[in-house]
Image (cartoon, rainbow, N blue to C red; front, side):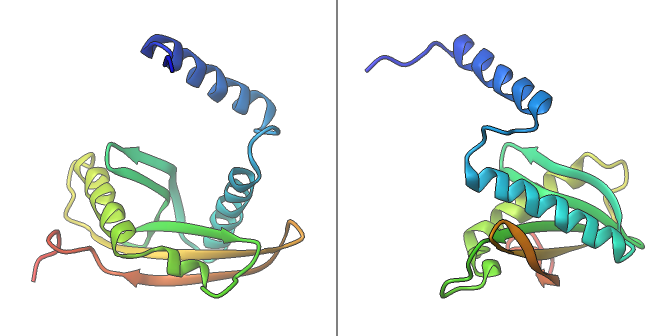
Length: 154
């Protein structure tokens, strides 16, 4: 099986990003559309609670953080989990030890970009539950977990 050269893959990815921006991701797979809806709903919900929105989909080589807010003097790193069914496990249950570690490392990458990274931080999870493609419940789990070891002091 032949693979496409790196340049071809780069331009295909670039074209997909441009197409998505122009046409709103109409042809995205269902789980990606559901995820984007959940992130928009979570962003609006947290803004209504008085948090100041800073950025969405921050990426580093270690991972991605869905939303970043400021709550007073605290930076809030938010993981959004959108589900159409809870099944046997709450959506927040998908944020396991591995995911918490990746989020911790990505948050540290974000902090490195700040001039003075001595700020307090917290990790929140927002669960967005859908029924028939419509939001039926939003759950905000503030301070859902601490910075993973070995990254925290004490």
